Amino acid sequence: MRGVDVSVFNENVDWKALKAAGIDFAICRVGYGKSNFDESFQGHVAGAHAAGLICGAYHHSYALTPSDAAAEAAFCKGIIERAGVLLELPVWFAMNDSDGYKQRHGFEFNRRNVTALCKAFLDNIKPLNCGVFATLSWLEDLIDWQSLGCEIWSAQWNSEDNFKGRMWQFTDALTIGGQTFNGNIWYEAGGQAVLGQTETVAAQPAQAAPQSTSDLIHNILSSHSKDEPAAAPAQETPAQQPKPQPNSAAINSILSNIRPQKNSTKSAEAQPSAADKIHNVLSGLKGKK
Image (tube, rainbow, N blue to C red; front, top):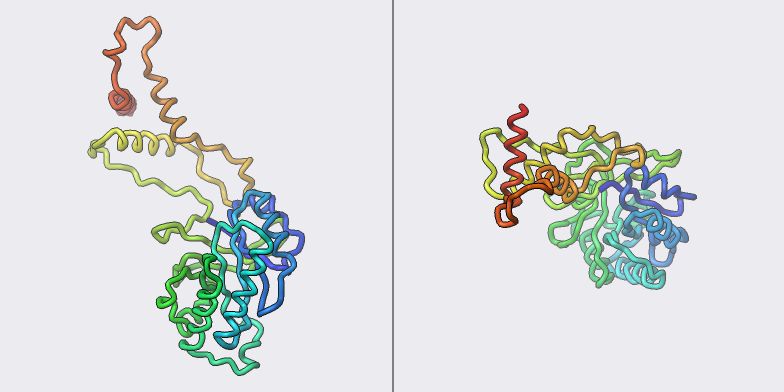
């Protein structure tokens, strides 16, 4: 899935334009520090949901100690609970020092301390599902992320993701409808990123015979999909693209072409099974080659 993360700095977001451009989700900032609420949070979640996007949230940390991080977690959880919003994706603890606050206040930049802060936030925001956001360098040098047992959202503004956590922030310059966002990729199970483009289904070898009815159906649908136009870039409006035929509809359409005519004299018991019908279709397709 493709997504954006937003805060009060993203004003008047055109959520419909984002949805039309292939954006699937939004990660909305709850706040920062121990007492600073992002006034756009509730409106961003509502706007994203109204346009058909799903949502998560993030909290920007200014914690210097584990007790600070625990207080930030309690504050963040309280805002989400009072807002009464539905979050389909995790809450993220954003651990970095983008404005130099930690550097100016004597923060201990070491793996033990940073990992302890992350753990304190994770422990105190329960039962909300929570993960950790950080830049690639922090994840490599300052966070023992394996010990945390949570989802990881990495930031690396690059054409390639060298971390491959649950989510990847790949740019701070994703432009849609004249507005600029941080762009993100949510990885599906197996570590595959869905970039808004149709995946190519590998063709089965011609000599490989299907082993079951389900295999036959899969082969028919794979052949059917090869005749469809190639998917357009994700930025184009979905309304401009041909809508793919659902699998069930494709199967019904195939089977309807081989149903017996009304004047057939064959009894109901003599009608071929669904597997036989599909086999006949495949035999007919081979004959046309």
